Picture (cartoon, rainbow, N blue to C red):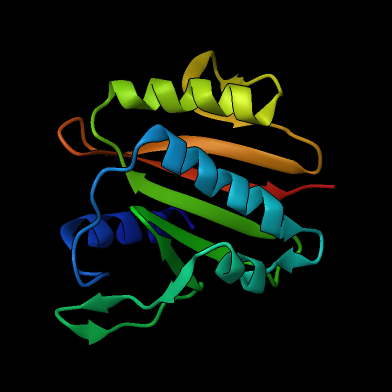
Length: 160
């Protein structure tokens, strides 16, 4: 799964997965995407119809202008890419975005603290990746890209 995310991030930001490369997303847009994932991810899966009703458009990946298969459905909205996997015991919805700079990641983490209304957890004393456990879900934020071209991946999973 981690390799898939990395490949999608690389292809989206280079422009090969979409007609044009995505621009950097601002914090409110990213939080809105996470809220979309929370609203559509449940024990029964990820509701793609709700995603569409929320303004997400289905998309397909391509390389050199030719379609390539994707193991999971892809959606886009504004400067965000969303992948979802609903037909599994642990449904997930993931937002991927380019961010303007490395300090923006801290702003996103703070905004998620407020939006999710739950305490943030770290791993091995580190602030990133960050985890939240709102009712019925797990949310993980990890950084992607490079210091010169940073990004975030925020995975929302259903949990019992």
